[in-house]
Length: 345
Image 1 (cartoon, rainbow, N blue to C red):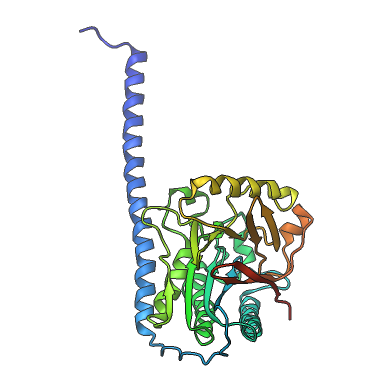
Image 2 (cartoon, rainbow, N blue to C red):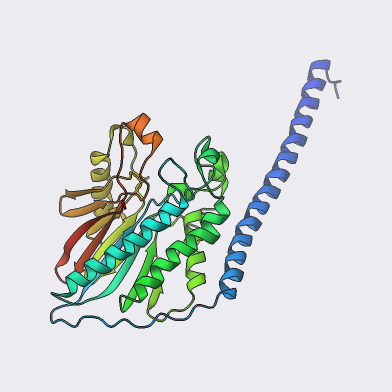
C-alpha cells in the first residue's frame, strides 16, 4: 500500500473534520426539532388546562322574530385583526372595541333582515391574521403591545370567545370555521422548519374552542388538518359552498390589490383543483374591502380592524379603513345581501 502524500493526508483530515461537524450539526438539528415539537405540544396542553379551569354557563336559546319564508344564514367574515399590533391609532384595546362594535352591527342587521324572513343560523368565517405574531418581519418586536403568548392564549380567546358567545345568544345555531394566515407563522426566519400544523392562528382558534367548551348549539370545524397546512376550507350554506382562504397565496400586491392574481387563483382552483364544490370565495390579507366577479365566481376581499399602517402608506401609498364584511345567504338562491360594516367609532 502506497504512502499518502502530505496533500492527501490533509484532505483526509479535512474530510474527517467535516464529517464530525456534520454529525454534530445533525444532532443539534434533531434536538432543536424535538424542542420545537415539545414547545408546540406544551402550548396546546396549556390551552387545555386553562380551558378546563373555566366553567362557562351555556348561552340561553334566543327568542327570535318569527316570520314566514325560508330561513337564511348570516356569515360573519372576520380577518386581519392583527391583534397585538401597536400604531398611533391602533392597539389590542382598540381591536377589542371594534370587534364588540362589529357584534353590535351583526345583531342589528340580522334583526333588520328578520322583519322579512327568519335568520336562524350564523357562520363565523375566520380568515387568518387574527393575531399579529412576533417575528414576521424585521423590527416587528418594536411595533406590538403584547407577546405571542398573550395574543394566542389570553387576549385572542377572550375577544373571539366573547364574540362567539354573544352570537350564540342571537342565533339558534352558530358554526365556526377558520383558516390560517401568514402572521400565524412561527419562528421568524426559521419558520419553514416548523411542522405545517404549527400556526398561531390555529392555536388561537383551538384555545378559544376549548375555552368555550360544549355550548350545545355551537359547532366548530377542525382547526388543523393532520400533517398539513389548513390554508383553505369550504363552509356550506344550503347547496352553496364558500371557499375560505387567507389571501397570501396571491402575490404581487405592491401594485395595489392584485385583481389578476386573484382571478388566476380562483379560476385555477375552480377547475377541480379544490375537490369540494364551492361557489363563493372569501379572503383577506390585503386589508382592502373589495368585491369581484370572475366567470361565475363571486369573491369578497375583507378589510382589517386596524386604522393606520405605516408600511402601507410608505411603500404602497395605500390607507385602509377598519371594516369587515357581513353576508346573508339563502339556502337555495345564494347570497341575498351584503354589508360592509365600518368600525370607526
